[in-house]
Structure formats: C-alpha cells, structure tokens
Image (cartoon, rainbow, N blue to C red):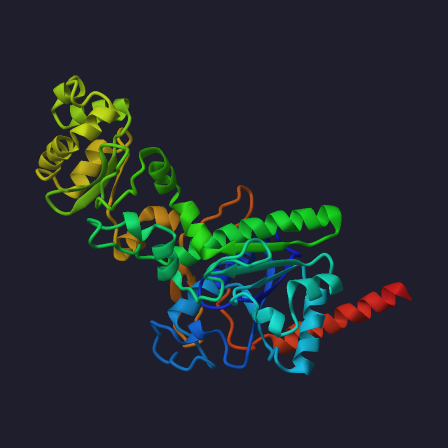
Length: 399
C-alpha cells in the first residue's frame, strides 16, 4: 500500500469491529497490516449479509468482515501452541505496532503481555481496545466484563440522551460504541509511534469503549455538572440550540440548523415570516429555546407545504440543511461518488461488493487502492517467506 504510513508494520490480533476498524484506518493510510487469526478465524467472518456462495467462513466471509478488513493480510497462528508462538515472535520482531482487543489478562495468560513483549521488542507500540480499559492505565470494577457496541453505548451515556423520551432509551444505529474507540486508538497509536521514533521506546496505548463513548457524549457531563440534572432524550431536537432538528416536509423530512441569530433571520425570511426574527420571543437562541414549540411549529408548517427537494433548494447555501438520506439515497448521491466514499472491492464469492471508503483525505495523496479482505491464513506463507528474506538480508549486511 502507498500512503503516509507506508513502511509501518502492524500486527493485528483484533476481531469483530473495534480493533479491525482501527487497523483498517492504518491500512488505508499505507500501513502493512498483518491480521493474525487463530484456526477458527475472526468470528465476524461468519456474520452476514453473505453474497451467494460466501456462507463458508474458511473459504469466504460476509459483508461485516469484508467492510473493515480490507487492505490487510491474514496469517493463521495458534498462539497456544509453542511453535506458533515462536513464529509470532518472529512476526513481532519486524513490527512497529501490535493491536489487540481481548479482555484484560488474556494476552498475559498466553505469555504475550505488554511487559514481556516490551522487554523483547523495546520499540514496539502495543495498543489494547477493551470494553472497560486495562488496569495498567486505570482499573475498573467492570474489568472482566465482556462488551459489545450496545453495552458501551448504554454505559457511556449515549443511550440516555438518544430517543424520544427517558422511558425509551435508544441506541444509535451504527456501531459507534466500537467505531469511535477505534478511531481514538488509531490516534493514540500514531502518537506513540511518533514518540518511539524519537525515544526508541514503545508505549502501551489503552482505549476503553466506555471511556470513548463517554468522551463522545461530553455534553451530558457539563450539563449535569452545571444544572445538577441528568439530560434526557428529546427526540431530534437539541437541548441547547434552537432550531436544530428534523422537520417533516410534504414528501419526507429534512435536518436543519439555525441556532445563530443570523441563520434564524435568514430562515424566517425564506419562510416568508421575517417578523419572527424581530420578535423578542425568538430573536436570540435562548429566547427560541424557551419558545421551542412555537419555533418548530412555524418551521414545520412552512416545510410541510413543500417537497424535501424544494426545502433544500430554498435553504441551500444560506441555512445549514440536508435530506435524511437512506443507504439507497447515498448510493445515488454525487457527493459520495465524487469523494470516493462508496468503493467497490472484489469478493471471494465472485461478485464485487460495495463498502464505505476512507474518509481521511490527504491533499496530493492518491486515493488508496482497496484490496478485498483476506481469506483465513491466505498470506501465512507469503509473510513468513518475507521474514526469512529479511533475516537473510540483515545477516548479509552484518557480514
């Protein structure tokens, strides 16, 4: 892979979503990511939807795995086997980064703890993504609890402010309880790699899914601190900004935001209600919040007389707005096409599939080439042959 991280080698011991998404970001940016899987493979290989002919995880995989394991190579090792553990050490010796997302203590039991690997490979950056973090950076009463996205969303506070009301907490549709920790881990890894380049010493990088979702939900912390009350869900409106939400149109719905007084004045004028911008009840954001029901009623009454496209056309460039797109809408949107946010990759079943592209765009850097996710152990021989050639070259250089 070409890219700013070309030459960086990452040993990827992760599975499912949080870890693989993190290493996928590194791979998209040019890192050589070697996914180390046990004989059973990443459990996500079995999860759908499956293209026709892709039901066998050993010979293929479903969409879940395909989406976040692109641009990686797969090596199959049984880390409980002493011979395979030695092969793993050979792999780690040439690596810059190791990423895993087991529960705390699992790698220790395998004899592959951060401390043992750091002694052997001092410059190696070791990253762990866990539900509740690692005691090396701060213990948790939930240390041994397993976690998935929905658990992180619930415990980190996100679900407490998502939904129509407090009686019906709602998770966010995408797996943000996995994906946001993954992004933060990638940031931490790159910071630690930079430090290791300067000092020669790697560092343990720890991201807890709970912590990441709490950080993502930062607004609820200061709201509770200042007001003494825990914020509750309020549908698609905002507790601090107004108007800032979703309104029905004659043909669907649009999201719009006019919390600044300038945007509100523009919106009022476009609606044919310029007097609303001069009315003391609506002139400021705080005033509009106090009279939010009237504000949304006025906006909704106007929007329902128009189609979604017409609302967007009238507001575009003047008031922040956008349609509530479905996946099918996005697939037809010129933005997604022009910015390569839907890309096609090959699939072992034969027919190519579409996955989300890389959102990190670097000026002057070509769009990454997307290689399909690997079959289980597809590159084992290739990777260890490279390691053998590298060892031979190093010996020759010494002699």
